[in-house]
Amino acid sequence: MSSAPRGIAILGSTGSIGRSTLAVIALHPERFRVAVLGAHSSWEAIVEQARVFKPATVVLVDPEAAGKARAALGASGSAVRVESGPEALAHAVTGADVEIVMAAIVGAAGLASTLAGVRAAKRVLLANKEALVMAGLLLMEEVRRAGAELIPIDSEHNAIFQCMPAGYLPGEIARGVLRVILTASGGPFRSTDSASMARATPDEACAHPKWKMGRKISVDSATLMNKGLEVIEATLLFGLPESQVDVVVHPQSVVHSLVEYADGSMLAQLGAPDMRTPIAQALAWPERFASGVHSLNLSQIGRFDFEPPDHARFPSLGLARAAARAGGTAPALLNAANEVAVQAFLDGRLNFTGIATVIDKVLQRLESSPVRALGDVLDADAAARRLAVALIEPGSGARA
Ligand code: NAD
Ligand code: MG
Image 1 (cartoon, helix red, strand yellow):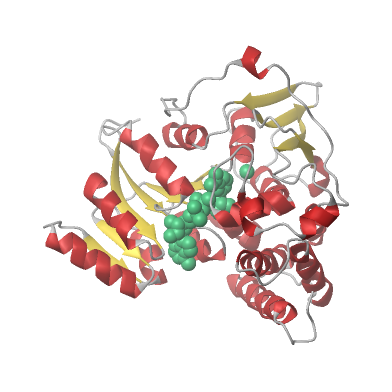
Image 2 (image 1 turned 90 degrees about the vertical axis):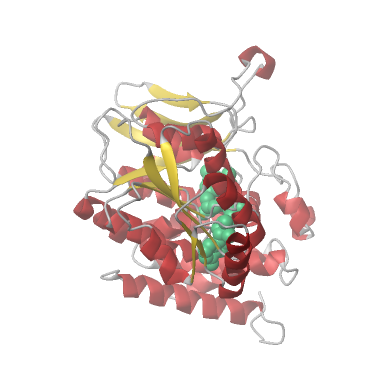
């Protein structure tokens, strides 16, 4: 690692991953300089972060929130530039003062800025799995073409990245790898019956037993759609067909994922369930440094359990696998329908089990088509959103 501090842009800085990233960076002030902080509208939180980390630029997509942040920072004599609008986010990551981009915006909203970081050949730390699921091979192709570094932050994919042989290239299958095995905690409803799941409230769905995360990914973990998105993510990052990406439920959430090699070896990465570990791994790579995470006491943990996922109670996992096999725009359709359905569930407009029903209907009615350009992905995303909204809207006659 060079001695000059490396400039970093943190997109989604006010979220769970963004805050964990700043916590790791605070441990290594001599190595990193925060160049950009970006978020949607949480202006008070980002003003606080800007006072501590002194970035050159703050971006808030929401113009009103950006105005408030500008006023607050201006009043305290800060020299930080405050910009607004989604284009400002994509523009800010391409600056010469940015070497590393933490892509930690949630959902499709993160696609443009993630892609901008890739095209500008930055080291992109990818938490925003929805961007990869949507754009798929197109994004991986951009990574290769630009020569960008893409390091997965999702704990499972980061674990696999760590277990891959040296010289891993994004999107290429490593020699001797038979399959990867993603572990899943099982979420809050691992042993809940279907009838109770149908009545689950947003707070129950977001009460994850092992991880403290944003609400969207928490609901995805409760439906197992998160694992479904991660299967698609793994096929793209590691160049594997869906049939070579397995899922096993591991309630302790200590084994973060595994790689199986041709000689029968299985390599796993273990650690406390704390996102500061994958974040620090990706920030320091190929070196290692402290993350602030406590070390594991294996004898206190005592045992590791593994069990197969229950596809009957968690149909979302199967829907995602089907989308992975279909390819083309199917993952973008799946992702968009899921985003709309999860938001409706969080708003109290759809019950928990309705999430998978909506996604299933969207995938049945909208056919997957080949992806030739980004426009194909964005069109599929928009069509799936329209249909999902219509299915959920009361009185539309199409309620899930
Ligand atoms: P979060 O809800 O806590 O934070 C989301 C961040 O994105 C916030 O800073 C918010 O301001 C910003 N944002 C939301 N909508 C935006 C928009 N339209 N434009 C610009 N910014 C917007 O979410 P999180 O849990 O930190 O997750 C972020 C991403 O990381 C997701 O893609 C998630 O799947 C992935 N991820 C999270 C975890 C975790 O432990 N939290 C683990 C693995 C992967
Ligand atoms: Mg994960």
